Length: 114
Ligand SMILES: [Cu+2]
Image (cartoon, rainbow, N blue to C red; front, side):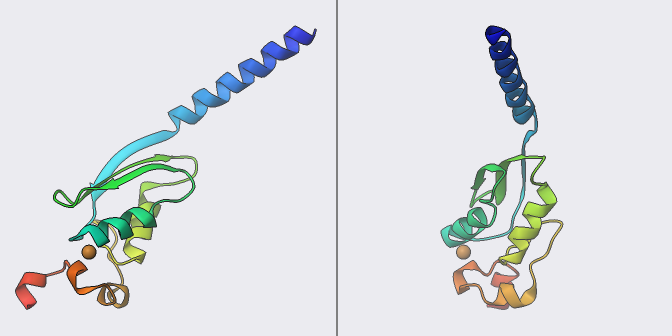
C-alpha cells in the first residue's frame, strides 16, 4: 500500500514535469535599440517570472526568449519592452519614455536628425 502511494507520487511528479516542459516556448523577435545599455534595459524588462531565458543581440536587434506560455505571452513581453522605451514591430514605446533615454540609446531616425 505504501509502495503504491509512492509510485503514484512519482507518477504525478513525472507528469507535472512533462507538462511544464511542453509549455515552454522559445521564440525571437525584433527589438529596436543601439548599445549595451539598451541590451541591459531590454533584457531586464523581460526578466520576470515565467521567462527562462532572454538575450538581445545588438547587431541583429533580435531578442531570443524562452518562456512559460501558461504565465507569459510574447505580446506581453513586447509591451513590457515598449514600456521601457524600446520599439518592437507590434508595440511602439511612448514618446515621453523614448525621449528620456540616454542619447546613445536613441535609435529612431538618429542619423537623419543629428
Ligand atoms: Cu542604448
